[in-house]
Length: 169
Image (cartoon, rainbow, N blue to C red; front, side, top):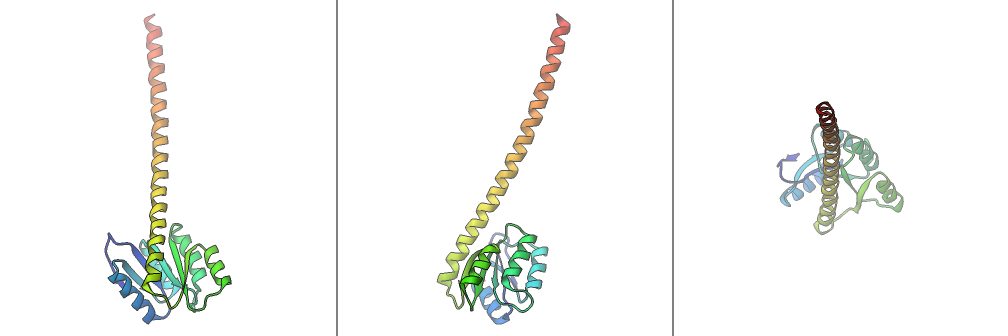
């Protein structure tokens, strides 16, 4: 299930219960997100290999791979991917495990849009800041490289002028 747009944040919903996954995709699409849904962690990992997503929302309990293992595997594909884990069977242990795996948030089912939307916005803000930070680091590295090249060019030209000046003396 896919609702595309290049300007909207792209969300990947992973839930083995197809009805819940479709309902969540439809609801978030109405809220202005570009949403793709998968009913298995393996299908979702393939989707991550094929296209860029800003955020993954995964169910904790799935038959092929749980949400925590999915998040770990997903972050190997995209280290900056932000993940939210949702579960109907929450515990402190699974919440801690989810956070250690890199989950940004841990949401108990059933939830309302009033619960989910602020969590999405916070997560997407973090994703935006991570992307901005990465761009700034790349720009800084490019500037350092250009400065080093410029310094070498100035040193070379200074040496040429010094040599030319000696010849004139």
